[in-house]
Figure 1 (cartoon, rainbow, N blue to C red):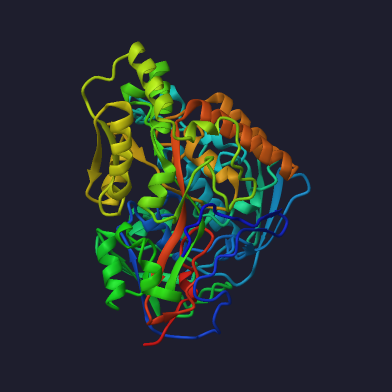
Figure 2: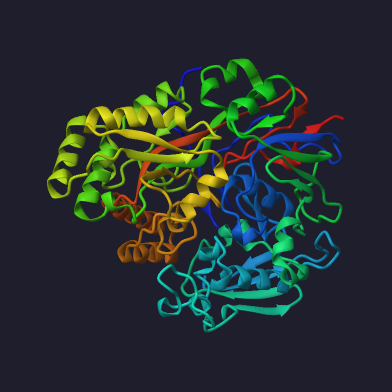
Length: 555
């Protein structure tokens, strides 16, 4: 197979109905007939970092569970097209006040009804600052968000609330329950793509029982999605089984899904080849050159809304100030993305030219400032020497942190070799044994150098690659980056009523990121996975995840 030189996306901006992305077919594009099979589908996964709470889950291992156990107002199909799920309609005359009407007949798996209050309570919980939810940022556009946050003078030096301090309000003023099946959302400014976001897990509903004991609910979640979580054996296995009360279109076509925790991708792939695992969602680097031949039409290698970035924590001294920016630029120029994507990934990655993804509407390969991503050894050394003249780096190696239970050392080592040869400094892989240990270190500001920052889109829009990762205080902004200029440009873009104008404003926001380099884009990922002969109807979606509910398997 000829390696892909460029990912290609087909898109149309039509928020009133759907946003269409590149078609992503794996083992068939049409879902199977209802009740097609009863076998248990086994899928390679890992241990979720956090309890299974929708507003707390922002990593891939947990997201497979959350999106299976819960259902939102809308959902995204394999192509990224938006479909109503619990919502009957989502309408607005001014893009500020949104009227949401729910379909009748929805219940949680415990038999209690899904109502407008279920959504409003869940969103208020997610937005309330003291609850410290990872996805709190997603509620910022709703009127009253600031009143749910603690002010700086209410926190200690470590950001912990001072005793007795509480926010000014407990509920978003922009949310109002009209009836059991209706509620309104008032935004702080017009935002035309607001409905597009509502399929993301931050916006799922929660049952009344959740608020009685959130900790217990995170271990044994009660949802309204196509599956229920039957058992969770930590670091080993999560069993999902069909939810008999599910009322939506994502009809389960198998007897359930077992998410099997692996600590390395080679083991998962070998189990697939041996017939002991049905689906792998990430092919190991050791098999990039062979997996399509080994699996034949059971292999997938297709564009996906995923980007890999080296993120630069603001708290690391060597990357602060003028010298720190010069070092970021030097490191970016020292990375030969073309060579790494061809030699390590056999063309299943494409060198990045921006901070988003080619399968997203508005992507561009000529954003102003993107030339900093071009390999230039001489310019890289000049920039590093300029930084050294301001403030010497010293004898410590440059550390690139990531998890060792996925195949990241295969590219970190050659990236380090290039940095070592070009800049004349030592560079090492700072390995954390498991993904959740790496995430904990990242979230607790314990990274000693720079770190791998893979981003898989939550919803199909440019804004999702920018705001949640680089917005001040955003849930996935673990670098501590803050730019008033960037935040204002993002707000302006979010509020644009003309889609083309919004795209240009998002590009301007990216230009600010290229000036500051809080992250160094590396490459866009293809979805590279495969499945066994025991399963059929496997489709990998726009975001690189398989559509689990439509996989069929005989007993």
